[in-house]
Structure formats: C-alpha cells, structure tokens
Length: 90
Image (cartoon, rainbow, N blue to C red; front, side):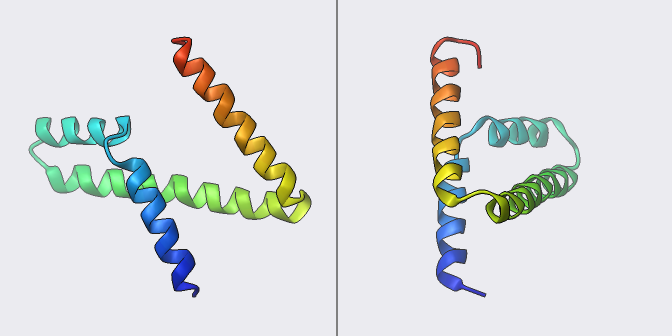
C-alpha cells in the first residue's frame, strides 16, 4: 500500500466533503432520528459504495483511455457543473 497516496486521498476527500449537502443531510437525519448509529452506518456504507464505484470506473477507464483525455474530460465536467450551478440549474 502506498501511504502517500492514501494520505493524499484522505486529505482531499475529507476537505472536499466538509460542509457539503450530503454532510448537512446526514446531520439533519441524525438530529431527527432516535438511532444516530443507524444514520452513521447508512451514511458510511453509502459513501463506501459511491467511492468503490468511482475507483472501479476510474481504474477501468484508465486502462482504455490516456490520462491526458481523462483529465481534460474531468476539467470540462467541472466547468459544466460550475456553469449550471451559477445559472441556478444545479
């Protein structure tokens, strides 16, 4: 296991997820629920599942497409999502 990659990934995801709408929704669910442990387990499993999907798809795509095009596509998607959010359609 490459610990530098592990720590970089942890730091990036941790900072990116702070205060996002998923975290706020989880906060509300935990506040409304009489079972905060169930909310935690459900949220953790959902995050693990979406992360696993991203890793599997990212790994598969990297085997058939050059990294240069993956980076360009990711950048383009971020721009599109940013424009949609600014335009109020996100």
